[in-house]
Every structure is written in C-alpha cells, then in structure tokens.
Length: 342
Image (tube, rainbow, N blue to C red):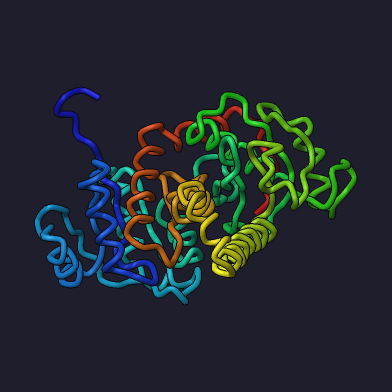
C-alpha cells in the first residue's frame, strides 16, 4: 500500500451482542491500538462515548449514529421493522463504500437478514452462506453453511462449495482446497435426496476439487479442507462440536483437580494445555463469515468479549484487503448457471 493511502475502516455494530456495548467498544479499542485495524463504531452515541471514556479513547474512534438496536432475541423480521438499527447502518456504510466490512456479535438471524436486505446477494448467488473455521491441524477446516440457509437445494450446495473454496483460498492460503459433502456415509448413494443429488452435481462441478462424502466424525480429522452442508445440518453440527469441546475441558479440569499428582502433571504441561484451549476456543477464530453478499460481514459469537471482537475486526480487515467479495464474484461468474430456484 502506498504511503498516505486511505484505508477504509471496519464498521462495528457496537450495539449487537450479549455484552454490548461495553465489550464491543473494548474490542474495537484493542483492534485500533494493538492490531492497527481502523474501525468506526455504529450505535447510540451517548452510550458509546461513555464506553470509550472508560478506555480514554473519546475522539480516537469515530462514532456513527444509529437510532435503534436489534435485540439478541429478535429474528429475521426485525431487519424490516428496524431500518435504522446499528447493524443496518453498518451495512449501509459498506454499501456506500465508507467502510470495508461489517463486524457484529448480534443475533445471527438478524445479521443475516439485514445483510441480505442492505447489501444484496452478489450476481449469480442464490443464497448466502455462513463459513466457520474448525480448529483442525495443521490448518483449520472450513465448514459451510453454518446456519444462513436452512432449507437448501442441491444447486445451492454447489454454490456453497464455491464460496467455501474461495474462502479457503483467501483466508487459509490454500491453492486447491479439497471439498467434502457432509452426510451419513462415504458412499455416493448415502444420505437423503438433497445429499445424493448434491453429490452428483459436485462430482462434475468445474472449479471444485470434490473429494467425496465425509461423515460427522470427520469434522476434526481434516480429511478435506472444506466441508459443505445445508445450514440446518451445519448449525447443529457446529453447536454439537462446541458443546463437546466444553464438556471435554470440564472433564479435564475435574481430572486435573482430582489428585496432587494430576495437578503436578498439569503444571508441567501448562503451556501445551493453554495452547490447546486457545486453539479449541471458537472465539479465537475471529468469528463466522457471511459469504455471497456485496460486502464482507463477520459474525462474532453472541457472548463475545473484547479479545474476540478485536480478532473479528482483524479477520474482517484481512478478508476485505484480500478482496474476498471479488474472488467469490469471479468464481460464481465462471461457474455454470443453475436454474432459478426461488
């Protein structure tokens, strides 16, 4: 980037999330001061100024007024009822070219609906999809869709594969990501009608390195780079995985506290245990990414605290700088056009 070049900020929905606006503002301050990511806060000015004052940051981060905020219990219809909500204004900033991307820890349904309404789908994209990274080694695995489109058609899953492939190329630096279809067996004929037809289409889809079906136990084994499924199945799989990780760590803590010898062993392995916990913590990944819109939208966990918001801002800035929207547009334009499904 040339000296003096203007960098568009990340529009942060400061009113979205269980811990808004305090933790959201704290995360924005971290993003600016520690990660050199420019941001603008969108929300109710008085509350945001009070939160900035706690970090001696009044005047350091711009504030854009929003009249309302979506509640965490509000669904997709709230995007229509609240056209001046903080997430709507943040999306509008991206649409006008005044921000590079959006970060929100608000209701996933509300963020998805508002993003679709304000940013619109990219040309040729049937439905957007949420991509998340699973903490596999040596690199993360992309799971898509994690909840944006519950009632998907087979042709949509093919597009999800294109979206996930583009994301893996940009976010993970993979040259030819392997794509797997999540179903109940590795054989081509396994699964419901959606999975079987999607398998047929993926097997011959240009530009997709399709490796076949994968099962639920493959989520963390990294047999492929991108796992494709519908939003209903993907969201259940993701939450089941998160719950399993929390349960495993709870059991591990109990085992460590069970005896003096176990505590001593844990002390010797403290650095490795901390690294394992950091890697498996979904908040350290920076959030999920809503792909397929005319703008980059990062959805942080609803219970996110400052560190997670800072990571989400950093992820959003990196994806915007690497032109994820343009990369997806190029892929969709080169792919055969599916029949209209809506």
